[in-house]
Length: 130
Image 1 (tube, rainbow, N blue to C red):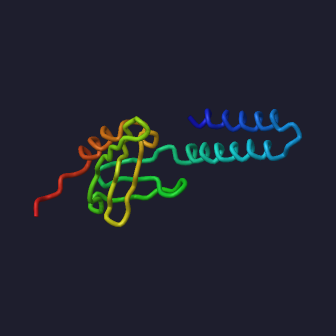
Image 2: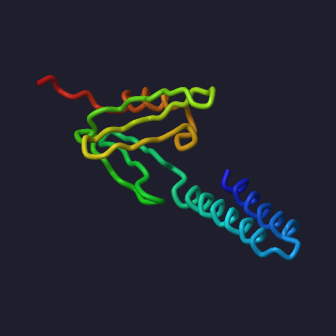
């Protein structure tokens, strides 16, 4: 996917130059769109893994390309939010720590959020009954 974004960035600059016809605004819009795509591609290259889980907790991407480690004891809920949008159904994985909410979509996970939620529940150690 990052390669496709890089190709798209080059295409935007080429189209901007082709249709500029001496107008710097058209070229500027093409360059601006290319910079946006390059930033998006850079994020994919810097932080390709958005979510990782093990017996101790999870690691999620925080900010542009940072990472945050969250122990299982801090996680209150792992749910999947499903909403209709533009005639399609979208799913979002929600990881709630009480003080923060981490939202990950299918593109971030490279799998359906419902499947990832099931996998997280399987990896999460059982908590003793109080």
